[in-house]
Length: 98
Ligand code: FES
Image (cartoon, protein in one colour):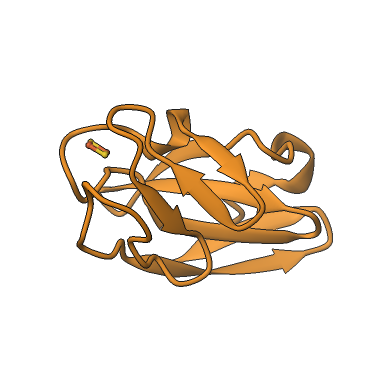
């Protein structure tokens, strides 16, 4: 079953979903959709409240940036990568695979 629809995902406006006990940040970049852990690897902030620029998401709390494609921590104060999840798009349906 789909977790979201593409219509629900505005470019630059990440959405937080809960799935299998995990909080996941789902972000659309153009026609692609990426899913990473929603909780910043630096502390307890929700990345879905952060800002997306190109393939980067910036944590609103202390400004760490992560690559949405790989989960890599790009700037301090975060230095631990985020887990990433595969995303399946089927028509308008978006499913995060855990
Ligand atoms: S909680 Fe995200 S950078 Fe500190």
